[in-house]
Amino acid sequence: MGKTYTLAVIPGDGTGAEVVDEGVKVLKSAAEKHGFDLDFKWYPLGGEHYMKTGEVLPDSVLAELRGMDSIFLGAIGHPEVRPGILEKDLLLKLRFELDQYINLRPVKLYEGVATPLGGKGPADIDFVVVRENSEGLYAGAGGTLKRGTPDEVAVQDSINTRKGVERCIRFAFEYCRNRNKKKKLTLCGKTNVLTYAFDLWERAFYAVASEYPDIETDYAHVDATCMWMVKNPEWFDVIVTDNMFGDIITDLGAMIQGGMGIAAGGNINPEGVSMFEPIGGSAPRYAGKQIINPLAAISSTQLLLETLGEQKAAADVETAVKKVLKDRIKDVGAGRMGYSTAEVGDMVAEFIKTGVSEESN
Ligand code: IPM
Ligand code: MN
View 1 (cartoon, rainbow, N blue to C red):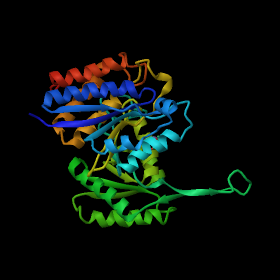
View 2 (cartoon, rainbow, N blue to C red):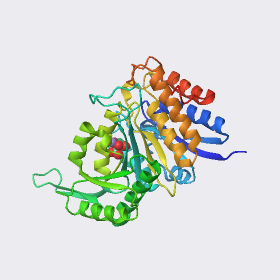
View 3 (cartoon, helix red, strand yellow):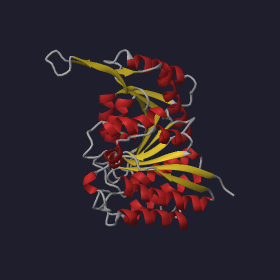
View 4 (tube, helix red, strand yellow):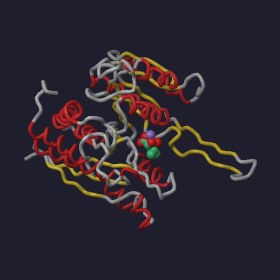
């Protein structure tokens, strides 16, 4: 008998539930094919739950999540809930409490997907952003004084610990080595202005680099990184950066790989419980219409399977996603796929079941 993994599923808000259903369908198909079992536990957290109960993330749920093998999240964000509540007390709280210190976001253009970058194709757009996910400007350090008065002061500090920065950088070097492509790691920072924070980052980066002589190192300021991502995306292999810069450049990354409909991400604690999510939001105006693209959620199940160590199952998910993008759906945008959300999930699940040969992919 194969292993059994316990997976927490948090559909969340808006279109989260629809895309999560397709991700679960695909996970089941991959598990069946590869001989392991999945035990799903569903948690109705999110905007609706908050409005009904006043609860965002009860301690009892957090305690249960700590015992899971992995977490699959749909989307967070409800139009009737004041911005910041669900983001801070649900999504960011999960990332911080479970110490998911890596936010892994592949930027990969698949065949059949349109990119806004003229003259660039799948061979040019294939890199991974390793975003620090537990510190920086997201740490919540700072405060306000004399709020609402003409003398108001607001301070928001970026926290960068040597330990936190180094573990992220080390993960990026390891990831780059295992990925085994260009074997080049770019540190994205702002050493010319943020002379305290990125001084620490830079020293940690080159100190860890000495342990990885097989990896080429490179540095780019964050503004230049944005420029190169558009102008010469083929220069990148793996990029490592802090929490805020990583947040920003991965939205740019999502756009060059075809849009939010296919951008996947993982919040990873390599020693603990990780959480996978499509990087787009809850898109409330599309909710319940079955027009949203579930491939971002489905590709995040690929990352989930990789992190569990089910490499073959993960590879099958990617092969099936590629086939759907190349041969089936017309456009990755919501309402333009030529199929419903569920039909796209069905196709991926079916391709995993029947197997897609390498040549046809
Ligand atoms: C993301 C999102 C979140 C972030 C928000 C919703 C808090 O933009 O996952 O990139 O800023 O990290
Ligand atoms: Mn973001």
